[in-house]
Image (cartoon, rainbow, N blue to C red; front, side):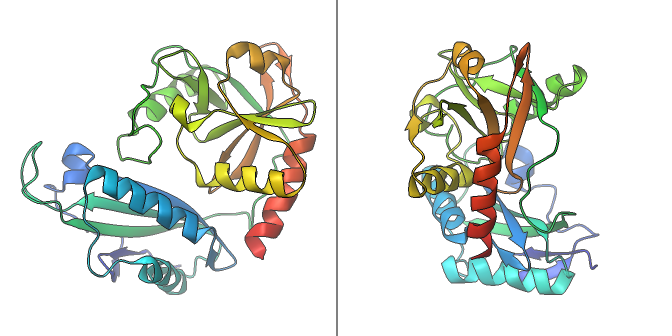
Length: 280
């Protein structure tokens, strides 16, 4: 497998410097990113990723480069898949403001990179063992327009992941500044109660996840009720299932939250539906 990346439309070696130290993504986290799943050489849910990325770029006032549109976005991914040989992989797309300046940039011109990393599993699958999880108590995520976008400022998720690791947990859940449970350190959150799906509303400050939307749409299309609403710790204790979603890993079910134990029947059903959707 070759170590290659795409930088502004050109495939270049990935084992040597690609961007300069003055890059605003490095200095100020001035940009956003998308993580896509590659299954059998094809990127999954490209339209949804493109829509979220362009929405985020508009919010951040980053201008898309002239050589980046919906068609070239997918074409660059496919070219990198062929060049690297990574047919089952994670694709990381990063868009950043390519300008001089300090907090105030000299321009809003954008630049981008694509990176691939191989994955061992050929498609989405459900783990045999449920995750051990808890609520991260140290900080709360503010609710604002940035909250639902995948910006490069991921400090909340980094700190939450470290907290979970230090306590022997597989993952943890974040709260917003109102005390509602909104997501995990690595994805969106769903609970199942009496066969009905519940997930935090975007107005509560969770990321507008691509996989979150896919799960909602798959559930509705298959006669499963879904409600977007505020969730609190009491809802976790009353739930039959708890699972997290992201575009690369699909569904990850929680087996234990404190003294609560969960099943994973709905998680299995939705994963099967997801695999068929990704391969269609």
